[in-house]
Image (cartoon, rainbow, N blue to C red; front, top):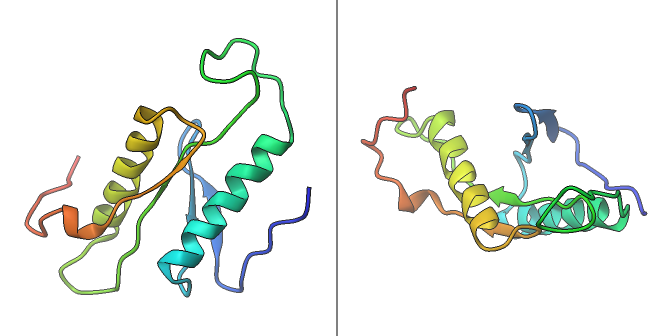
Length: 114
């Protein structure tokens, strides 16, 4: 498997039990989608046995991608919510895929407080 190269300033971290977040601050949406697909394909190519799964015999990834231009009216929670909704759609569509969710789908006045 070829290494996945991140740019200076990119950041990846675990964000919960089975979730991760990858921030690509200077990457246009097409590049973010390409990076997500590289990550998805790299994990699938490892062919890690996942015998108990009904989705696939090997470990796969479902990825949600979103993008935001910084603005005073947008919060990091809104961006995270959009990416989470894309992840939900990827799982709903059959898993082992990447889905884009635009921020326009979410009204700015929507409260995302827990």
